[in-house]
Image (cartoon, rainbow over all chains, first blue to last red; front, side):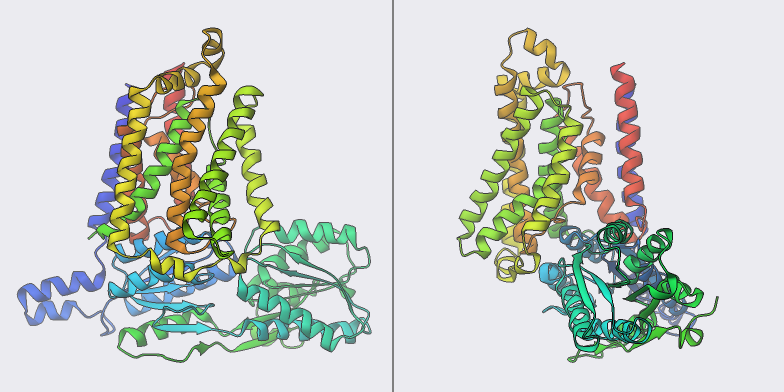
Amino acid sequence: MIKKLLSMLLGMTLAATVLAGCGSAPASEKAQEPAAEAGTEETAKNEETAEGSKSYKIGFLAPTLQTEFFISIDDGLKTECADRGWEYVSVSFDNDSAKAVTNIENMVTGNCNVIIAMVSDSSCDSALADAQAAGVKIMECGVQTEVYDVCLNTDQYQVGVSIGEMAAEWINSQLGGAGKVVVYTTVQNQDMQNRGQGIQDAIAENAKEAEILEVVDIGKDVVGSGTSTTENMLQKYPDLNCIVCYGDAAAVESMEAAKAANVDVENFGIFSCDGTAQAMAGIKAGDPQKGTIMFAPLAPMMAEYAERVLNGETFDEVITAETISITSANIDEYYTE
Amino acid sequence: MINISFFIRQISLITLLTVGVSLEMIGGVIDLAFAAQLSASALVGVSLIAGGCPVGVGCIGILFFNFCLGFLKAVFLVKLRIPSIIFTLAMQVILSNFLLVTVDYTGIVIPGLQESYRGNLYTVVELIITVFCVAGAFFFLEKTYYGKYCRMLGEDLPLARENGVKCFGISVVVHLFSSFFFSISAAFLMFRTGSSNSALGATYLYQILTAVFLGGILPGTGKGRILGMASGALAVTLGVTFLTGSGYLYRFENILEGSIILVALALGIRKKN
């Protein structure tokens, strides 16, 4: 009996996957097949969506889908693709490059026309090159390796400098330069290392009296590490008055931990990057979160360049996204409750 | 349509890991550390190669590291009688964190390595190695006394001891044999990504446990067949391939895997009782 049940479970898993596979032909393929067979005007019309553009399938490969920054890109891309009549799939590789390679292969099998890869380093280059060889367009975002058709990237060191300058300005104006700073960075990724270095250099340059007490590796997109690290830092350094993070996910957690520890909200500043709604809500509410760097919305930019690369445009230069420093001075322009 | 080359590469790795974990489970060990072991050993291999050693030395480093861990498992689980879930969970935490704090990540990407082991020829080599390994596991489990004793250990360790079975020796053999499978998997991952860090392969934990339980290998029974392991690996590979490509997995992969593990375990425990 039990064996039968286990066999049924196994069989159901197999059947479900086969059915899913059968139903997963991409919109472009679905449209092209009947057109090729019949060659009629009516079937040719099927290639076009309501908006008059061809239908494609876009795959988004994210390091995680658990933080607001990546969730917002995911949701934004979903909307952008739906507006264009495209299919859309997204998957997280949980910072495991082996899983990233597998996911890229599976997106090729799933007939994606464009893979938007937010990979960490060049460990996926082979898989991306194989995908390119299979006719898939590769859009790298947030990192630049050897393999891409279009690359959206930012100078991460410069982003770090912007965060550091924002923090230094607050330290000088609010604390008279007497900042006791902890920097949260990560060594798991070269870009984040560069960003972390930019933060430290900018603080050292612009707030000369401030002291960087410690630079902590909090891991990359590890949910909960911002909370636990902040609790530890507040215990270790009772005079701590500024935390500068590489990203909003950790900053928001730090903000909650700092509030729970009853810090002096006016004289405690947290600065970070990503421009997430939670971080901006904190700035607006007068919480310890005092500033964040916002990128120009990535999802519309990704969709636009996906469309352009599918239309045959080529991009030799890296496309850079604009950044905006958000503080209490300009929060109303960018955030409404 | 499925890409055969991608499929072979994925199923090779999943099958090797499934067989390795299944052998341990048949021998009575629920191994939660194999994914961390995979990451750590691949990191050892990549570090050696990045340090100037030939690729072969890197592979030997992986094998040696895994054999050491396999021996350690036998000591702690059979000699010291520590419950396998506690020990392997602790080992997972130690391994994944130790290398995180001792090794600089950014230096351990070797793009040339990745490029050298790319293409259909390498995929065929992976397949051949996998087939030989699975055949070896079949021979070990079904045709040798070690296989039979392994099942006895898994079914009832105290009883096996009372009957004079050399439990420690058998356990060492089983763990070394499993470690061989983990070593090959780690080498495959190292060649495939040309890199390593503490997270490499970490996400295989639930996938492989799902494949093991789907294959009908249940803890504490000493039972399990190679065909079951292969079926479990096939189901998981096909599932992940199609569900990822179709967008159905989305944020639900771990929920699905956890549910399958629970159902399979519940069925197995009901049967045992």
